[in-house]
Image (cartoon, rainbow, N blue to C red; front, top):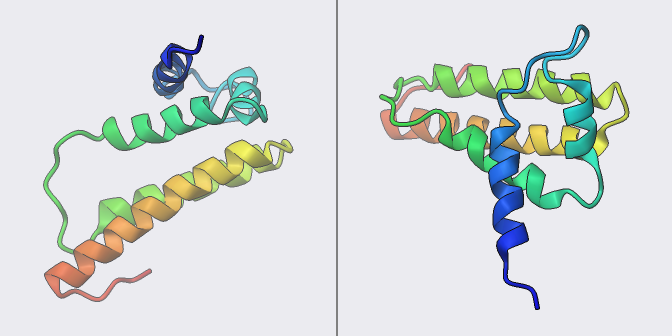
Amino acid sequence: MLTGHLYAADLQIGELLIPTPADEHLWIDESVARELDAKENVDLRRGFSIGTQNQRGAHWGDPKGKPEFDMSNDYRKKAVAVEKLGLRRFGENLRQIADDYKRQGQQIVRREGFWADE
């Protein structure tokens, strides 16, 4: 009988993997990146995404969305780095995070009446 505990555990573990130490050549431990890329680890990747958004906590918005655009660019660079290792699933996950931050920045810009540089 499935209880849903594995799903919840995978989400939590995915969040816990966010601050893993960097490798010599990568912003995250490569073995962790490979585990996040594994086909069966959809829920770990989902937890990583949720945790990435949640780790920011409460914050004041910059009316030009600069922090959001900066984070979008940062996560896009991280995606490129893992994709160079052939980790396309994790790369796509990071691109989705980048897209979310970009959308947030664009929403702020529209709401505040500024034109985005992006």
